Image 1 (cartoon, rainbow, N blue to C red):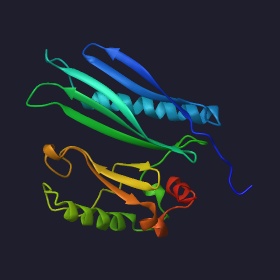
Image 2 (image 1 turned 120 degrees about the vertical axis):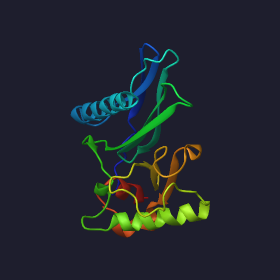
Image 3 (image 1 turned 180 degrees about the horizontal axis):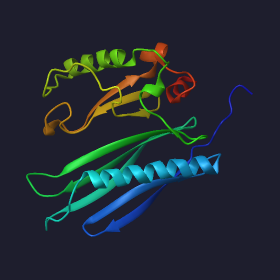
Length: 204
């Protein structure tokens, strides 16, 4: 058989509450391997905890926290999702943190950006040029002149696109919010690792 269909995993939402905070945390079931499912869920749990820790203290009487998530891709054995955590801890406004995770469902492997591409490919230079082009086209006023993405730039996979993004204040002023740069997998096909998540998105 040229292609074996793997059903999407089932994404559940677990509600966790503690004083001044409400968190909706995803967890999965239905994957082909129980150990891989456990690995995915453990990565998600740890990441959600990191976001909570990153917000600091909720000691301010007005403080509050809300966590939620978005599923970006759940097909072709690739699960990609974003965890968000909003907290008001005092000051002029609250702060939202985002962390995205992209998994190979059969193995439970969590991918870094560099692992999406062929070894030795100058993916930073290639992606940076595409981001710079979008910054100019969208007339985004950056805090500093844009030079390049980080080798571990935040990303998620959304169907046939790689979406790079910058967190609040990372690239531009707070008013811009999160800045997302979708890149078609076809525009970077020559450097994609065909065995990785983006390679699977290239399959028809």
